[in-house]
Length: 360
Ligand SMILES: *Cc1c(COP(=O)(O)O)cnc(C)c1O
Image (cartoon, rainbow, N blue to C red; front, side, top):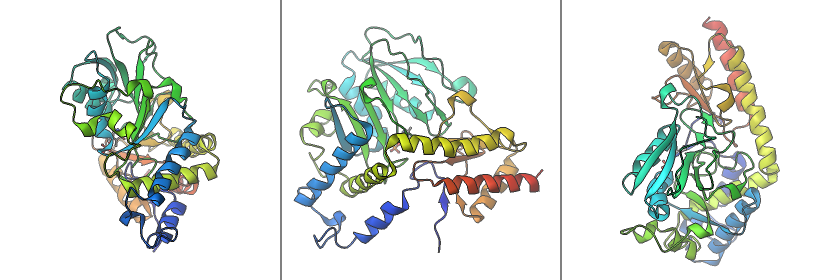
């Protein structure tokens, strides 16, 4: 039995090395005689795991000292509520709606205050990023919210919005650690890790310290206060301990690969192979405007649902897994995250080329 190339959007491919290491440590983590899954989160070995994970992500992303790194639960979706509960002091925030995840965050925020749609690309099935150079941001807005890489539609901001001095909050679930970022431009960067970092169950929140206050909206549950988790080093209650351990291993793998600049170059190379083919193909077409293409999620269509279905089926038989597009876009989507080897993309393009010949 061999491993397939997994193009799933999330949960998604993880580095094989990381899985092998975890397998080797499954029964006896570094002489403790137990698995990390069985270990107290208050134990010394576990404290070392979470401390190292934090130190490594700080190094990888060059996170300034006045930011906290929180390892939380509830997925990215829980942040849709947690962000307004903690940040909406004036009960007003602006949202750029570039897809389903941004829309869900926008709708959830409406439970807590006035959520204003500043721009949207819904008019063209979210196939582009709207111009965000002069948004109607008002002085009473607590923050401006974006989804930086749109997993379903395959778009990515190439420049951040002009927030006119307001705090920028970004969901980076599907582009987390795919390229270097300037953390100081954001108030909050967060992501569910199951797209590009680790196993489902962990969400990482990088938040500027001045945004962590006691002053949350009335009725905010204890577990949904950033301050509680920040004050307790993400160990207020039992954290998603095993997931954090795997994230830590992925951070070490990324460091070994050469860090985020190297990953960006690799991701650009991988994406170029696929986009170049899509641009010359007579059968397959990318669905996103060129300027806003994601390096991570690449949706494409043939324009014929039957041929799309045939492609997905035959690709699967050839060891190219989970290429079916999201139901709202149709067609196909190849998610080519950090851990997707370049050989996987090459094999996909070779398969597409042959499929095109046979189905012309
Ligand atoms: C998958 C995804 C989410 C939702 O993540 P959950 O962890 O399932 O809540 C939110 N935002 C983006 C950009 C995603 O890709």
